[in-house]
Image (cartoon, rainbow, N blue to C red):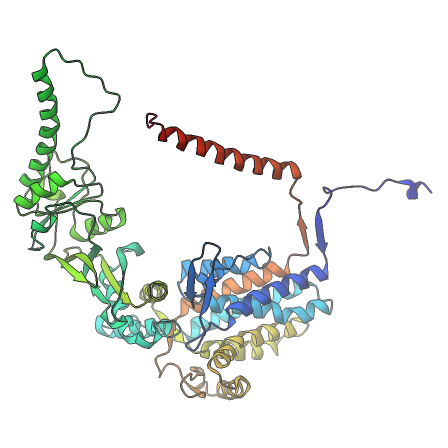
Length: 563
């Protein structure tokens, strides 16, 4: 009787939403499968693109898994994990973002029937982790090194890796053209780790084929004053002065008070201002520099002064471009014009201003350090150029990875089929339930070739059966066979130069398995309600902020002193 009278214990705040157990796990798996279905059709050379329209009215057309995942405003907590693995794959390797989301979705899909039948998730997780480490070992065995080749051979191998990446993008039609540009750009920066040393500038108009690579730095002509057109626009081996100061007349502070006893003293104050600016300009000229760039404004007086002395100047150059010019020309950005010595001046073979479409570009080529390159992209629509830039980013990352970890594997679903065959064989040697789980992991890996066929409009069952038969040959000669996108059959991916760096696959398998295991290990979700008082405070602060802002603007309109 005493037990019945015990009061109910309220542990969580009223309105807290808790869900646990098998139903919760299945619901999480379903959510992840839905996310994987969104990007499923973008995989491979025949993948479709997604048009995403956000609340600000921006339209993005993309084929890149990471971009799509970022732009989808996913609220389901478990499905957000897939967004994170796509981002990590993008930052770590650059390509394979769709692959990683698809694999994670497929691992969960294969696990779902076991969960529904009452298998403990930890058993699945253990088997999946074993399968992943076996698969990664196998990838390392199958990988082929490109070390020890001459630079020309290496370049052609890297171009093939870049072409494989670009084949699934919007600019796939010109993949050979862009692959060679990307390889030249990456080889130009050498062992430099900073990716921003490769600049990508977008100029609407013209065709894709009008894109070109500058072996050095190029940036758009900055805002200029009168006198700019009188400056020379081409120099051979100029000295370049990089500044981070304003070269214009400074007015005195608004609240400065100067008491004069004699009107003639006023003129000396005005003269002092002019003398300061002329002194700065004179020091720039004396340094021997023929090109002066500054991150801050170079005024009309300075522009005319330099024009009279045959010096080119550009103000308001962006920080990124200025740093790239400094790295390329071996110059140093100065915060003062006093004591400008030759060591801080940069140089290059040729500096010229060139018309590209309806924009004018300042181009520095033949730079001594050679640690930077700029790709100028042309194309019709803005969205198209944006997508081309994202595609080139992926290709640049892949080529850098292939240069550093110089091993490649066969693409086109070949490596996935070989891993699947290997894991199925390995599963037969295991007694117990984990045989089933590793088998399901092996089946999940087949999603890549299957999806490649579906996206290209081929009969996936037919092609997969051919691939299974080829990979099962005891001699092992079928290992490099993958889907042939052009004919709808199967082909030797290595012979067709469909290659990808092994690091892409290793990273994808690792990330996808980790994500799947993480989601399988969650058995309860607790969602705390937002307290009403917190909501009220947030609304009040938002209103208060608006009110204050309005007041400040009104005050300035009445002629208040600007702070």
